[in-house]
Length: 115
Length: 114
Image (cartoon, rainbow over all chains, first blue to last red):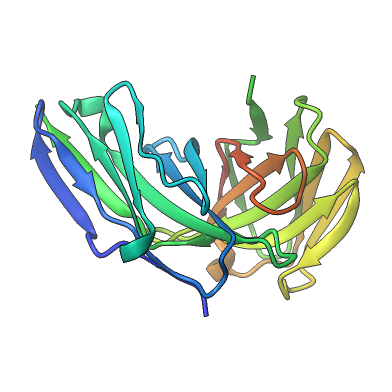
């Protein structure tokens, strides 16, 4: 069975702190894709990153970075020098290559960045 | 440009009303999706259209009726809804409707059923 676990339900940090959001996934497939989305209070899910299972390179985009480790089935997301605008719910998702278009979402982590 | 638009932003309807939600994308994407999201939960897939044909129906009750008039438009017709259908309805589109397809979401319609 496939599953995505985001164990942190809610995190609060003070502006300029670094914060890491955890994502652990389960799948027996060798080929799969992982995603992160941001959902601000307005409701829209904003695409942040897509990573396939064969690409274990970490990625940095501005203040955002992602650490993909197949050995621990984790795809963690770090925000450096957090800002109030980073306050949102963040979802990690998994899709497979077995003919389904379905995202398997984690339950989300609500991040609150306090000024 | 990765814009998906949805109208209306908010909708309040009675259980006997008929209404429609609209979604539009102009990115040339050939896959379009409807999701339902309850508060504090992740989105749940309802329907997938691939090349304007319904390819997945996640056992959604018939009071929800999707329609894809062309490759840019997706509608969700609502009839005889129940209060528990109140939720955020999200539309998304994707290039390929295949493995690893990135889905781009619209801002959603917040539906309240009285």
